[in-house]
Image: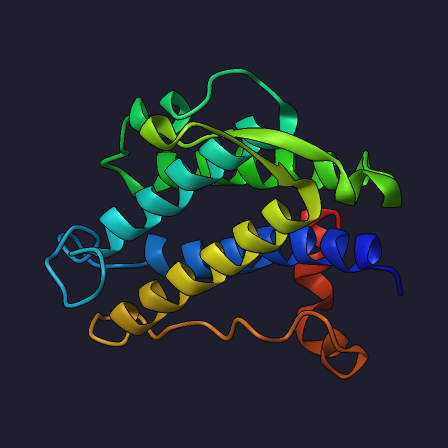
Length: 178
């Protein structure tokens, strides 16, 4: 497996993990989505909005969209989980499409990242992708932990990459078109 193959699989995992996590979030009782909790961000709502805002930022960098830091700064948080899930799915599919369009040599190509007062910093595409996946996994883990104190059990999020786990995810993978 090449690094590009791995990154493409991680983009698919991002979509799959978010779909699993949001199914749990969409089953929350009224008030649980926005309820204050102990974590880096003060609620499930705030954490999921943060994931999407950062995805928008890095997708702009990767796609060389020219929006820069405004992609994050001008992000309008969602108050309702169904709309947030729909927007996250669009971002996840953009990330998959971006990765599918890459060639191995593109992973070392640098794109400009707008770091506001720190300037325009060129970063390797492969490094940005690794960062995005790590960022999203990190914050999904926080949502997963916050779900433990709600009416909905946190979903299993680590059954994606191994052949052994295919029986546990086959229907979801087909449903998502992965």
